[in-house]
Amino acid sequence: MPETNAPAVATTAAACPECNAEVAFDRAPRRHEIARCRACAAELEVTSTDPLSLELAPEVEEDWGE
Amino acid sequence: MRIAFLHTRIRVEERLLLDELERRGVEIELLHADEAALDITADAPPRPVDALFDRCLSNTKACAIVRAFTSWGVPCVNPPEALENCADKGRTTALLRRAGVPSPRTILAFSPESALDAADDLGYPVVLKPAVGSWGRLVARLRDRDALEAVLEHKATLGGVQHGVIYLQEHVDKPGRDIRAFVVGGRTLCAVARYSEHWITNTARGGRTENVPLTPELDDLCARAARAVDPSDSGDSGGTSSGGGAAALAIDILEHPERGPLVNEVNATMEFRNSIAPTGVDIPAMLVEHVLARAEAGAGAQGAAA
Ligand SMILES: Nc1ncnc2c1ncn2[C@@H]1O[C@H](COP(=O)(O)OP(=O)(O)OP(=O)(O)O)[C@@H](O)[C@H]1O
Ligand SMILES: [Zn+2]
Image 1 (cartoon, protein in one colour):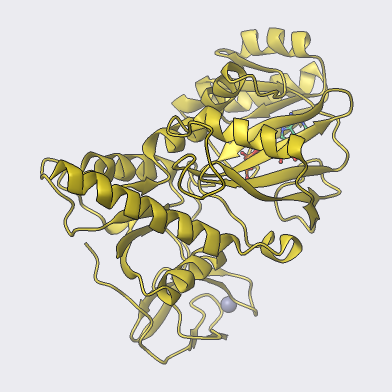
Image 2 (cartoon, chains in turn cyan, blue; image 1 turned 90 degrees about the vertical axis):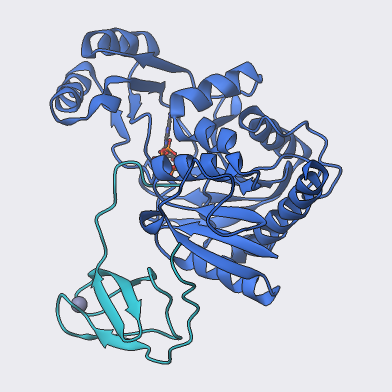
């Protein structure tokens, strides 16, 4: 099972992989947290918290939903 | 207390739920669906947990993972039956009908030809939906036979095998809104109405959300809809969150101008971010409380079995 990834790290900003603008979080994000870049509107996913890194969020799949 | 938190993405809902779990001092085992590898021939989960809280976006993966944890005696919210009953719209509709819960008239067809005949029977406009899917994706309102024929051809050419089951529904001329009610452990917590200019009122297309007061009729309709998909719900919630069903469900309702409220569908992995403020109900806290109550009930059962 994956390790617990409680938000212990203080980095709360990283560059948008799409447009390089800074994407800031109001608090330390968790891994797999979703954010939207204010500059280019790309949907991003936190892929690591230490160091903070962002990737384009994967496409929604057909069986995703409520 | 140790809870496995099954997830895909940490959205606003998951953050609120994780915050609430942490506030209560619960130990959280974060379980990302894509990172799980479960030895289902083992006698226990990889690490002992008191319950599994499913917030996985992939319905297919959630069903498989929840089945595995259930086989290990771990209480899951939602339990696999409720999850599976809500996953397939045809299945949900049939269960609602069996329980006497009113819903829009629906026909399942299995070829474009029979779907066109079914639509003549239902009358236009007709609503076509993927049997599995959510967030209003690929939900279409067709005004005439030509339009339906075109969409059915696209479906047959571009869709996967699951599109071979064609879910067709009468169009309900609703008053510019739909209603969503939250039922946790057999008890209706609160309800909201979602308004939109678009006929698909439930997705965030600039619509607004307002509180809907819980009348005894609405409460009863929702409790019955929840019971229809949750076999663990005997209907005796006794005013507690653990006495009724094991499930936590969102009931979607369309108001028919003559027939009154019709249950459109039941959602097993509810989204609630826009419903907390208008209702004043702390939905994430209620959900966490329910999961913890299921865990405690499960501990009793496991203790008895051991
Ligand atoms: N038969 C119908 N008549 C009128 N409006 C409908 C009908 N079916 C669906 N709608 C509208 O379209 C919206 C989306 O439909 P539905 O909820 O069935 O799809 P969905 O993809 O399962 O959405 P979700 O899972 O997010 O609730 C409904 O909330 C409602 O506003
Ligand atoms: Zn950007």
